[in-house]
Amino acid sequence: MSIQAINVRNQFKGKVKQVIRGDVVSEVDVETPWGIVTSVITTRSIDDLQLQPGTDVVALVKATEVSLAKL
Image (cartoon, rainbow, N blue to C red; front, side, top):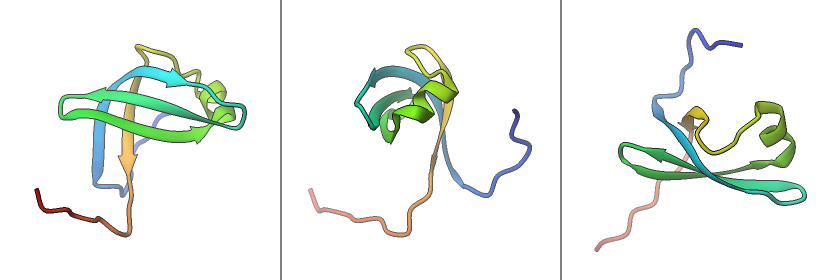
């Protein structure tokens, strides 16, 4: 499978750093040049995509709301 075009603007290329498996959902940490992006996806998707540390991925972020906090 290859993606030829996608409408998501917020894309972060990186490598899987760590997978924390759960029974139903799992956490995937992706190391990008801008820092770590964490995704929570189904464990079935982890298996289907064969994700493991070192796998090249693109994190696609689509959000309807972005919250800000003053530092």
